[in-house]
Length: 192
Image (cartoon, rainbow, N blue to C red; front, side):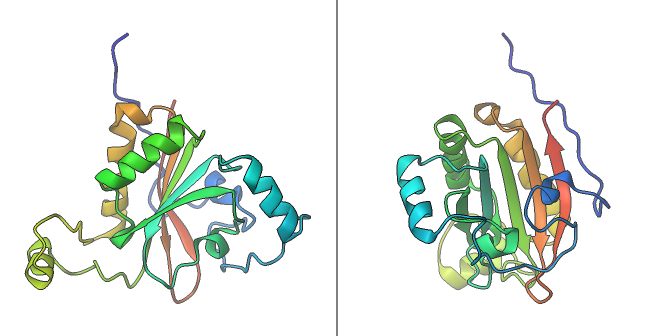
């Protein structure tokens, strides 16, 4: 059987509705991040026991986001420990290491949905690869961000085109506002 690239369906930037965001406890496209300290019914001890039995994320979700210390992924998305894989790097960009992690997440641990979540006031906005190479002395791509929507679209397209990620059904690009705590679903791809 010949591998064909998957069909691409993208949500319009600023789309007024987002079924993907609606699946999280925070149910509107624009919302305030809430604390995840309250559990749905289990105590912390019960959650730990349950987590020890199965390493697969219960929501079949992986989140790629920035390493910025202001982002509490679980609180922002209303998630609990054990519900998602969280992969962090500078800028929340899709790099070779992210691809490696997602290949394992999808094939070995059942992940079928990926959220790439960037944020406002990111240190990679408004700089160039050359400037970062000069500053650090490192000789590799830093994936700076000129436009979040364009960067998210580029990263999601890269994920969608990888034959080893064919188990992914939904890939979405979110932008998190670090000041207001709001999230926008900017880009979304779904497998037909």
